[in-house]
Amino acid sequence: MFDSRNWGIDYNALLAGTSTKSLEETVSFLLEELPYLWCEAYKNMTFRETDICCFKHVSFEYIFDDYATLEAKGVVSRDEKSEARLVAVLGRSKPEKRKRDDYRLRGWVGRTELFFGKRWDKGHFIAHSIGGAVDGIEANVFVQRRDVNRGWSASGKCFRAMEKYCFDNPGTFCFNRPLYNDSSARPACFEFGVLKNYNELWVECFDNL
Image 1 (cartoon, rainbow, N blue to C red):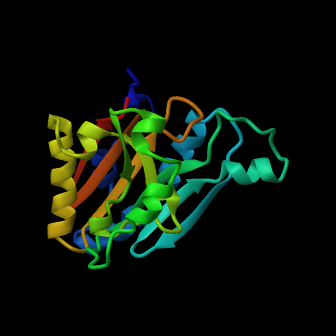
Image 2: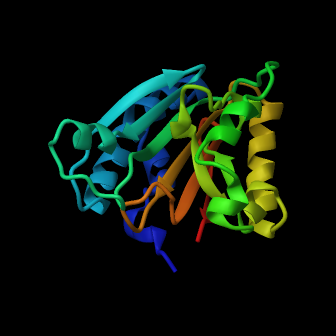
């Protein structure tokens, strides 16, 4: 079992150490501080070259390790086991009325069960329902345990409840931070966090093995 505590962030201590007294001040603080903490932890857990970049889509900022570019430029040798992957994504929920871009999801890699098996889905780090997408940002897609993604297990029900909270409360600050135990893009687990008020950050860690 992968022990996420090795690379965990003490979010309660982080909030306790601030002097913010409003929700907006807390959101601004987290948007500024969390990327630095996550990137530092990611580099410590990743025993290879990294090429971390950031890009925005809708109301979310994606922090991405673009390892494939390092290979293309010849900075590192090609390695089938090492993949470009998400470091973290954070922002505010923004429920969308547009159709899901499932056509793009279906084309990602290929048929899910054929390539990954029946235990797995093509999941979203940020659900389409709260502002995530696939078209143009495949970084938002990962191989996710089906029982969690579909809310079948106890942890899955918790995960879906957190997503529903973000949907029911537009503008909610939330994040997803995958943790890896190898060089692939499939996380061993991931942290999902929701800010419920200026001093209450609801964070759960979901197993993905």
